[in-house]
Picture 1: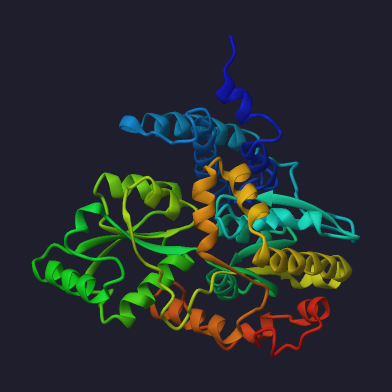
Picture 2: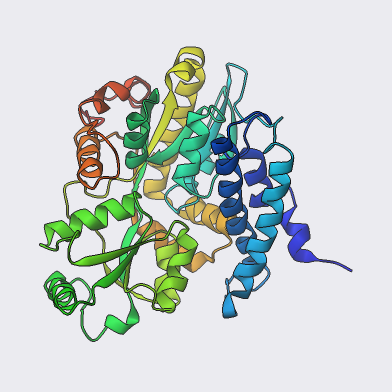
Length: 412
């Protein structure tokens, strides 16, 4: 008897195998601390749950049909078994994904629509071998970088601030793609709030808060979508601390289900999941949260001090290739769309809509990065304001050489 779901899950070409080989959750040695083991298994569970759902989706005509959450239960059961196996083996004690040679780099990136173009970089790279690792989200990518499982990581500006708060020697070397955020409302609000009408939404939020029934707002706490939404709310005169009830949803694949089941009234969703919600009529587009001090700032590429010292030539080749990819996507999004379909099992229409809500940009916006640091501190997401430290953790030299532009032109 053939079991296509399982056979594809363990195919070397499918994301779960890449996740097992690459994730920062695959930790070193049985002597790891309790925290490390817990982090390994818990993150492995979420990684594998997400990846198995994609496998199931691929075998249900591309749709994750969670009738009574059956698919979710199947995926999570498989993920739990996998995670326990990892624990029993010391979370992969022999696995190490950091490339050892000076002309090779191990690169991590997340699974969002504006992150996946990272997978196109190897085709442009010359003189450097790139070992690419796709993670579920930026948190995983950052963890892999900080634990030296990868040499380079595509993350968000918020992750840069988080790393600096932890004293990590990370260094920003390039921008990548910005945007990818969308504020989506429950269909139940269609007769109350018109798309783009902030006055109507603000009035409705204040009315509900006054009635003791605050709107439930979904977001992945600390993500770019979360920060942009909160800043946009504040800019519109909405008190995020008193007038809203926030619900943390760490897996973006869950946004749709939470809206449909009325567990939330509004979500600041990341692409391509945002487009998936809208095209399936599970919610409706309200606004892009970019009219605030941080604008559409999203992705940034980080490395570490030790990698700069030991692999500067390889890093230069990597940045050169990234610049070429970013420039090419401004004129031709087809490779981008194809990569999203291949890496997420989402359909072409969803991918095409998603890339319209993203802006290829290799510059590093220093002032905006400092604003992100202040915002994270104001929200209580980090312990200290590191806005004064950001500039010393940005190295424009790789970009300057790749583009022949000045640091000022590149965002300093």
